[in-house]
Image (cartoon, rainbow, N blue to C red; front, side, top):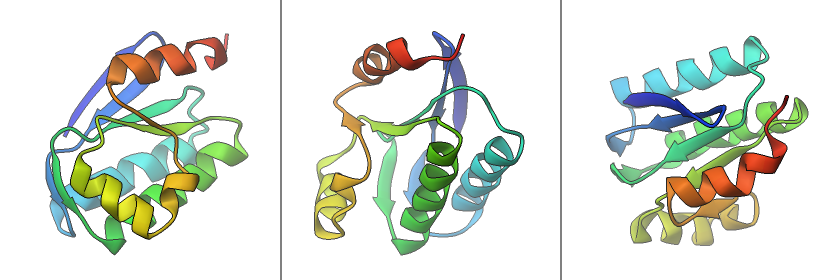
Length: 116
């Protein structure tokens, strides 16, 4: 998993399948810590290197999304693959999560809402 910060936004780029195991545990721990510590920036999940996602991963994203929303922050997805788009459509999560074609598009969309 890679972390970077651009324009005051945190970008998290998980790699490989998010179907349990270390990668999903690390993502869950990070997102929970950011919520607990009232992290004051929006978060972009770069999905370009996620090869598969199961219900456990969806649960992690939903929990994080709720926490960020309650604090007036956004958790958005970028570079969502066709396979993940299908999962989000089937589960109706496409109506919950904002998705953007690229990280740059997500940054531009969130730029006006970055806390000062």
